[in-house]
Structure formats: structure tokens, C-alpha cells
Amino acid sequence: MHSIHKRTWLSGITRVAAAMLLMLLGACATHTSHVSMDRDTQKTVQVIGLPQFSVSQQIDIRQENPVYAIIGISAKMVQQVARQAKRIQYRDENPELLQECLTQMREGMKQRLRKQGYIVKDLDMTYWQALSGHRKQDPRVEGVDALLKLDIKQFGYFSGSPFKPYRPGMVMVADLVSMGDRKTLASNVYNVGFDREDISLLSFRASYATSVYVADERYFYKNFDTLLSKAKQSAGGLEFIARVAAESVAGDLKRRQTHYMVAKQ
Image 1 (cartoon, rainbow, N blue to C red):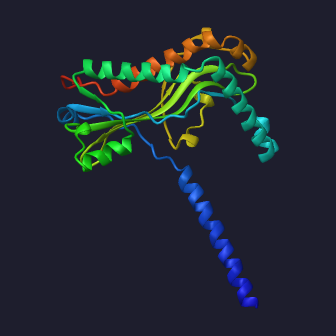
Image 2 (image 1 turned 90 degrees about the vertical axis):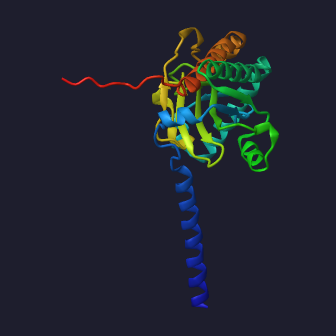
Image 3 (image 1 turned 180 degrees about the vertical axis):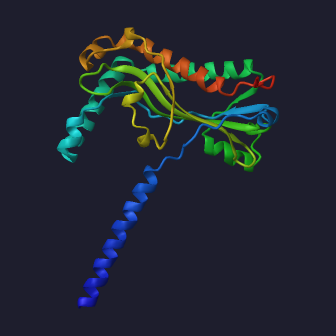
């Protein structure tokens, strides 16, 4: 009997250890450094496929409060419920805003990439469907050299504490992946607009981010009530963020016509 209890106890410890390991692995950053396009890649990539963006179906309205972290899990659950209520209220004031921002971002990205000399194919499918389509010789992805995968992690109004204003921003991951061998040709994590001191990159599985400072105090709101009372006006802040995000991603893929030279004395 003692042996059975010992095996049961060890089995339980093993399961706990395995669960903790999975949690640690899940928390580990998958984006650890910015990967820039090299000149050889710029020569080989002519056609970029743009799949659907990976994004939440709601604009995020969030304020962090350190007190909840101290109190415990029950308080955090209350905080999550309050956040969801705020998201719903804001969505009711701007029901089409998320789709409008995504459309502007997509169009801006395509336009900038084409100006930079790429052919862009607009793909009405997910990134994974596009990869599968390549294997199955789907005509919709014919000729595509690389896929530009966009994962929008957070988009909306965010306040780092009850003492900070809500400000518009976006955190996103952009990966340019070759269609054939799935090699990452370029990669970057962007924080567009948020106060970088307030962003927890680990929660986005990233250890770095390129911060794009686009703060416009016209779109800073001291509390949620003020934000909600000016919900229509605040839409302009998120539309601006979406346009800057598009320029940031596409600009990173700019073709370089000449080598950079280093002058030495």
C-alpha cells in the first residue's frame, strides 16, 4: 500500500512538473531579435502574398492596476470582467471602427509595398491556408515568393495605471516567410503608440520591440468616462495608429539600391 501511495505521489509531482515546464515554455519569447532583409533576399522576393491579419475581434480597452496583482486571482477576474464591459461599451459607440482600421492598414501596406517595387497579392485566406495552398498548387497563391504574416497582439486604448491616460496604440508581429521552405526572411515586433514602459512584451512572447512614437495628446483621455464620452473623436487616434503601423511594416521591407559604405580615417 505504501508503494502505491508513493507511486501516486510521484506521478502527481511529475504531472505538476510537466505542467510548469509547459507554462515556462509557453512564456518563453519566440521573437528574440529583429531580422532584417538582406540584399540576396531583396533580389529573390518579387511577389509578396498578404494573407488575412490575425487579430482579436474587439478593440481593446484596458487599464492596468497593480493593486489587482497584489490582491490575487479573484480580483484579476473582476478586472477582466470590467475590461470586457468597457470593450463592449466602446464597440457599441464605434461598431465599424475595427474593420475600418484594418482595411486602412491593409490598403496602406499594399500601396507602400507596391511603391517599393513589389507585386502584392491580396489573399482572402489565413497564413496557414496559404501555406497549405502552396503545397496543393492552389492557383490563388501561384507565383507568390513570400507571405507577409501579421499578428496584431493588442490594438486599442491602453492606460498603464490609474494615474496614466488612455492612449491609442498597437502591438504587432510581422514575419516575412518564404513560401517554399518557410524560412523567415524578415521579422520584427512593433509597438506603435503605446508607452513602452507600460508594455509587457513577455505576454506577447517577445523579448524586444521596435517602438514607434506617435503620441498625439488630442487622443489622450484621462479616464474611461472621458474616452467613452469622446468615442467618435477617439476613432481618429486608432485610424492614425493603423496607418502608421502599415507604413512601419512595409517600410522595413524597402529595397536598398546601393550598398552602405563606411568611411575610415
